[in-house]
Length: 464
Image (cartoon, rainbow, N blue to C red; front, top):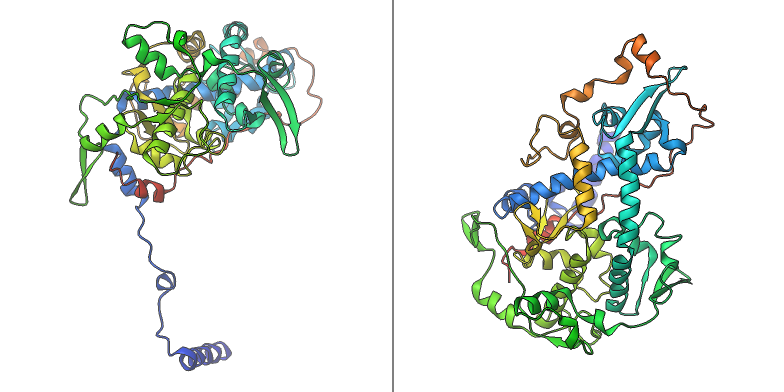
């Protein structure tokens, strides 16, 4: 009775104050037009490049395997109790009831799983995996001079000629930087850059400007097509450029799609021609005076992203890694919108929580045109990886591939714990007892690269 009286009094008070008509909760906030996630997904299917989606599937598998390999590498004798690997569950995308133990057990050519005399399950690297670890260390060392050049060129493109070490670390695996990048590698090239400490953290500071390195990869490619094999011979102070960007589309590509009864163009021919003819500043030139939103500003941003992607091993990056450098490289705030807008130069895979952007000209179907030794090393890892689930052909793209079922499949339900006592006795691993139950000190990847549906809607997919 008291509650009913209170509600009646409140209603009477509201009527006296403003004579406001009762409204449902959905009417209390102003309506906002936003594309629903389902609509975005349906729309993205119309411009999906299946070959590059296959590449994404392969990269997902390899990255998950290497996360386990890296965790085992830091352990003594490269072995650890299986339960300590459970900290990798978020990084591997495993949801309960799936366990890391099942994940590890599904690739016997890379990981060995054994039980000790106390019944504790242990995981370690197989002899083949150990050989791969040694090969990777050698390849990373050989790649160091090239990686140093690319890091130096990143510093040359930055506004203040310095970049936070934490941000460069995002590119570690993509650019082929060694595992000890922070502690040893940053001190190996004092003639190129040096480590400095500011109030907000450690930075790499450019030491000397190399004019020959201030020539973009795009300039080199265009010069090679014109028959000039030495683009650096004409190197000078970076300034304005007027070069078109190569655009590549899938064979069945249509320049428009229909959404809610209306035709929307991916590529508008007139705008594309105007963009390709626009003069822009080199990524290595001073860019403080550019007007955000202008054609020159946008084309320079495209050139910067093209250059950064050219530095990576697989010509591909997670999009949130690019957005971290908007301020340092003078790129637009709505960087994702620009990537989507220039479909044909870039391809954004919208599958999963972490979006990836490709440099389309670097691929022929599902294969990189030029493969670095470290890329071929990753292909070896993929060939030794056992878990494909029910999809034995990695070339097939499946909507459910982000889930643990795709990775583990039916065979993952078999665990070493189900083996017989005789098998357990034969597989005893004689190692020292675990001193503590502390988890592995391995960082997990964060899924902060999701794109808001509003950005997709703002992009309008009306490219150029």
